[in-house]
Length: 531
Ligand code: KIV
Ligand code: ZN
Image (tube, rainbow, N blue to C red; front, side, top):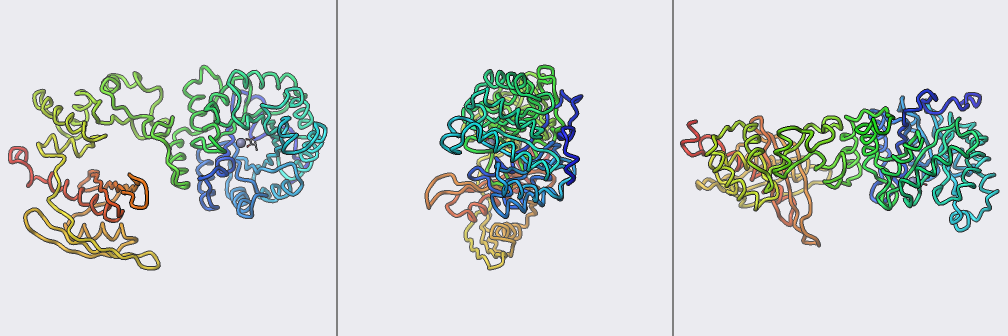
């Protein structure tokens, strides 16, 4: 790294002509990953980093190299493999941290060291035991050291929002003079309101010496649920970098959520007058990947990426959506990478949505038939939270969607073997008196059971989704298995409940086999089968 190349002109991908572009600084792999329940190993971090690159984030904070050898290795690996974004490493204002951040970033095409030091009275007194002058001297020395080791230096005044504004401006002015190119003013404890944040950013830009040579950045935590609103307020007041995370993960209540900020800036573009380089169609895939890598699911009602973000159940809303999607949606699901709006069929749904759903399933009942189907649908919807396509199809075909059988589980044995493989044997009984027993080997007990059931019933299922969750608490908790499989170019769903999750899986698989058999032409009432 040639220190001569370190100038204010090297601010990540910026020129001041691009004043209307907000840089997205993603800290999922640092602030997000350090929160309880969200840790990721090196391989997971590298996968996520590639996803963030595809998403188009400007800066990826890849980790805190001094925290552990694994963090160091993850930052170095990400710095080596990624091409487009600036790779950033966090460091305290200490020589050891700075040198290890610089070392981890050596192979990055664009590198940034992110230095942080507390500035608020509370932190100065109780955490650092430093005077104001010592804080400034420490920050300046650290920036000067870091400049020699990377392309650009960001300085964060930790707990900036609870710092005396005059002192904050003094620290930031010294940071600019020492060579920092990004000034980050975090709301470390999520204390501020949007109006206060906007006022502080405006004030800082008027009072920091050299403010016009640097980028101001926000970093808001969500302790009072205002992280996104605060970040947007900072942007309105001139911040041109926002620090955020996928799914809003981060310390305590989390950080500002990247997908919410980006979509707010896009959907309300005329209001904010700025844009980002994010490919918004990758937001949902990025969110899903993170939930898979961390094992932490999103609440259904999470903005932008939650299961309900583009789902409608109420009859009034569904009716509106069928007439004009703008009635209840302010963005298209495709814009965030979700295939389509979902009209969920449940007890709140109305006739219009039912007719439309039946039509997509290939049924065109006349008004009288629709009335009859509607009555049966409502009865079922009162019992079930969601009525799936296969239930509707059963009703439309005059079958009982609640029926069990014809296949029932009589016996199930599984054993797992060291090294991963497993075997299962099942004995099934059909309502017509037949019995079938089969055994199979699989990649685990669930796989082995599915294969044994397929063989015993002669079905051909391609598993597309498998979820298990506890539905009660304690050592004898009931587990629910939910399976989705493809058969004859259609998706079929089945679920089973048991204290043993392998048995729950077997029940779920049998539920699918039974639905398929019940809806086969030979099983249909004669009038329907002859249609
Ligand atoms: O919340 C915070 O203040 C931080 C700094 C390290 C930027 O995460
Ligand atoms: Zn933070």
